[in-house]
Image (cartoon, rainbow, N blue to C red; front, side, top):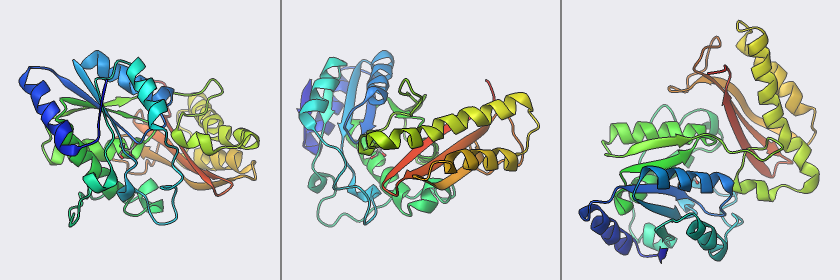
Length: 284
Ligand code: PAF
């Protein structure tokens, strides 16, 4: 596996792979790989001839006071893990190379970015859309794999790809969970041992919501949201950023439960660790 840090070099290598007739699969990441990232890499490997993984903690998607500086980072560790998965190229650029002097462009996807995480983190999705556009242009993939844990991000990227005519297939990968149910995330490394029970209230409350729908498919949206919040708030460490039930594609709030209704949660543990989780509410 080759590690590339220069934007111009990765683009040349991607151009060469394309002209040699290879299908390129891209996995964009911010590093600190866990089983969730590794399964994205395996999916890309199954669906493409060559896999490019990008590792870039993108300053443009972090606001002042967020965890840009403390985001876990160990290139050697990640290099070993990506190599084991048979990744062909690991692109790990410096911020100065991605956002050179005089950088002025921002990609904004309207509507989809206003609520949920976009409401709590204004500007976050402009940072994501901008960097993902740049990564698409630098790595020239035929397909790109993103995790469904960042449910809104995936919807935003799908919309951007459609609107801007990127000739790239976007593949959503189901959430990968720890044995205890916790959705895998690099930010789980911020959790202290004594905070795990509180963190598990996200997946547990999703399980409860799904059982409410299984027992009564006509159960009201308000009833589910109240029940979920109640379960989460039993843990004094938890504060809810949002609990909503939205349509899978439009992200518009659902007025009743349908096959496309997704329960989406963002919860802070001790005001320090912001966790996300989501699930469709009906058995598919
Ligand atoms: O999901 C992430 O890790 C990031 O938001 C992404 C897509 C790599 C863009 O920086």
